[in-house]
Image (cartoon, rainbow, N blue to C red; front, side, top):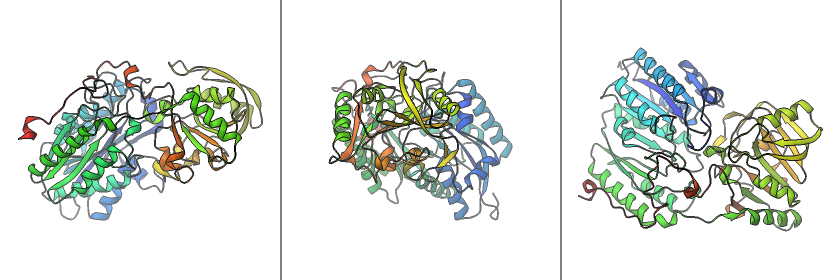
Length: 513
């Protein structure tokens, strides 16, 4: 490394949150969402509204602002949350990463931007596989820093192969840029001679994702406690809630504390945080609004203007967790009950969106929802609709997790279904920003009930319109159901509090000593 040119830093990443019960995530799913090779990474990062994981763009900007360096862009891929990654794609992707790493050597450091909760059709730990490949390619003395979603399912292999793992601190994930900046600062420290010592403590807790919000609650308290104890001895504290739908032995809550030049302080803090998490395990439980109660509440809200408007979160059909975003339980129930003033989004149905575009704005026809879907929860439904507005262009997010990002929902249509105005899209993406509705001429501010196919990220996008006390999480069927005992796990070892409330746990002996 020459002093004038700065360190040579390889940049790569792979983003997929795998719901093992959803359809396989294919090569085409990655290609249509994010697949950037070589200089495409740095060029996209320089755009005003990059269509890429924001932590990568932020890392590059932070490194640019901190001094001389040589970016070595390798490959960055990502897909919307879905089923296990197609192994043939993953094999080709890792081979291409390895080939490009070999071509740019020598490498002084590596930054990896991953989600961390991926499985493939043949591997239960593709993130670990990737980290090991990178380590073997660049060698044992090269600093590697990786950022992860706080829903990552972390394996020991992941912690062994990477020097520092940095997880998001906020849920909804509005701190992706901050974590990219932190990763750049951490990498600079390691290049300056700081030695990282990682302590990893997984717990037999498998929290439902709705209990992992960070504004308040047990998870928020754990994260806050960890951040309060950063010090000259503690480089990073990451507390990952895990992803309950991964069906992998590594899934669940885990504590990662990284010490600066010494492991002792990290061991003590990790033990304390893990103990607090276990003591509060019963708080990772929650009640939800029954489907019929939600419909009745929406009906009252639509008929009485004195009542405040509400959100019904269709949490079991959250595309941000791999669900299909097309279950009909709320749509059918609200329509049959004659509820008025409803705004619903977004319903993933490419065939229906295409039909609306063929017929044009103002057309009225009998729509068949899920006419081309064959998944378990994607039941068909026929209803008369009117096409209100069409759009097929990109949009730029305004609030929450999508702020400043270029997105596409594909061909979209605003349809009127009785008292329900709904957004139908050709791209599966959770409705977490009011701009999704604005994209097709709809306004969440004027609705009496807003139905969102989202688990929790909508809270950061719709917060100006709906405070937490006007949000109801609906208990209905879907691929992201809150009832884990109904899911057909094959690989996940159910020695977890959520399956056995009487289970015991204590830190390993090396931590207790």
